[in-house]
Image (cartoon, one colour):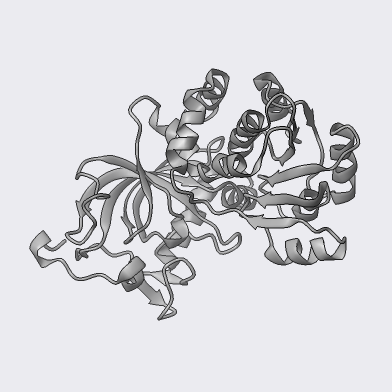
Length: 352
């Protein structure tokens, strides 16, 4: 790398890292420059220790590799070699990472600049993060985490979080990976509302269930849908759901009937999709009454299936495609874990 005095001026939002197609920003680009032989003045360079792959991407790779960790590693290696980033070509999704700050560009705003040597987690997707990997370590399927040695860039303006001192790092990373979910439930669920969460036993789903319970209060109703028996049992043990049901998230009509039955004959105000499989759009939309909201926090979501599906069944429902970023979302989600002992214990057992 060149000396700090020889930093090159970088383009806004990391556009100088785009190789193909020219003129795009890093996220939709096919290939990024992941070399580190020069320093750019608007970049934060991180020595990467762990990748936290998003659930949809990890499941796709795990299925393709027949559960073999070596096969998963080879798929990540191939993607990064071809694209200069961990941008799964099948799911079009990535994840985030944990590492140590190596360099802070001279043009990085002082009010957001971390210190060199500080441990941080990125809050922007790996689909837009220039990444080079030297070697791979442990693959942890339960948390979709892969230990690596490598280097990455936090582009101009991309969010990140300083690792909290009071939580294990791997646990914090797992929470930060889905930090955008519970704050969105808090924004939309009101006291007395009925909320259904599809995939309620996973990382984002469990956080959403806990937040939904807080938001709707004792007069509201929280229904968790979880087909994996162990996770369903964990969810029941948390005590935040009025009912936990097992149902196939791709069976829209069956889901509608099961949710309405669990909600005492009524459709719900809010449905949140946290599943990591294709085809759950209508199962999320159908149980919501007109004027309600279907929120999709899943990288498996198809905008076309949402929009045309709702139209086809005559549902006047607000459709929200989840934004993984919300101001203050990292602190919000970490505080949910801190203040819910049973949730913290469960996440520490699974991910920490």
